[in-house]
Length: 165
Image 1: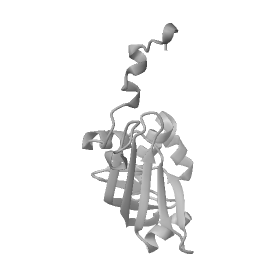
Image 2: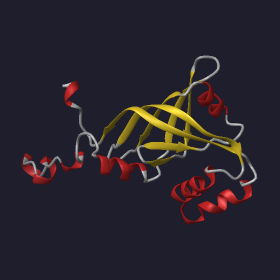
Image 3: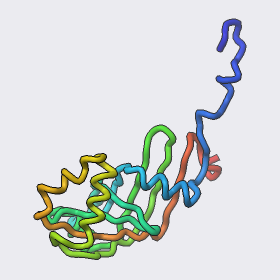
């Protein structure tokens, strides 16, 4: 407020909320290419949810994830392909929440289809030096899974969906 109690135009503007509502397809694709961590939830051997943050690549309406050979969550996805994911951010409050089916594309290996995907992920998450991160670990086997959304919801902006009103 200005002195005297008058509200300024800047203070009444709702621009700070951003665009409110679902992401359009091009907005979704752009957001998921930015390199926000995914949180992937799967079911552990004990029947409890197991959640892990991981790198991902979004391509053609599905996510690629590359667990290390000894990643317990890879065995969980192999056993039970139903999983959940969320990718979100602070600031503009964009988020994606999905229920997915995990498709095992490759069992652990050192020179499979996962390699070019991992190189792109390393660059996206670590910048121009990202591929240097991979070099000393290229002899370490990795799995490759594709996560296909069955149900996917998106949101952006600082506001409530109408269903909550």
